[in-house]
Length: 317
Image (cartoon, one colour):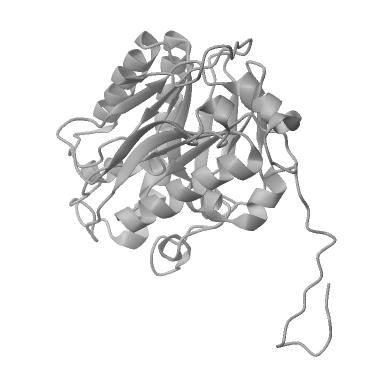
């Protein structure tokens, strides 16, 4: 769907940027990587036709590869097996990006690094550039040595493209106040949030925090999550996801903080819905961040605040 613009008249834009968020359905079984690449190709064509400059896929969109993994693949083998397919998948995605002429955030996929595995997002751009972002804070299942045994990343990448300052913040990372404090100093125009959550509670943790980050960082947040059961894994799971573009809650930006959204769902009959939002109000949000916001105090540090806690014997700062 193409989201109607709810901005009032008078907000003129010099920075033109449109985005497509694909809430991918992971339920269908595939017969190989060719089928997965074909699905991405189809959605990139749809996004391009709708005027998008970038297509964003969910975290762990690659889990669908497990539908054609060797029989008997165990939970502990899933991450290494997917990582072994990642290089081929990326090599085949790059020509699609060049052909369609739009960027692709290819969700996340496991990548082997220094003898372990990270959960890595790849941002592929039409000029051939690739930027990566590893998930910084892991869920218990990701971190558990007896489960997926993933290692957290330790760096945050800022990307400058098409006159924008972008960052990728993967799923749980958007929920972390400590990371938000770091983000507040980076003057970001757009933050992309690929996510993967099992239940509505998880969806709301990620998406509600994403909306909060748009308010407190005075930036545009684009979040998307996967949909559908995955019965082909050793431990079958569920995915509840949707898509949304959040803005600061300012009257000049519509007042609600939500520019466009697809509601959360746990199943769908097709490859998953595509939310296309034309002409993100980047310049208007920049003006808010530069001082036009009604009450926003800027990147507030709380450095002057002292703590008085009855559990401590002395005042601490």
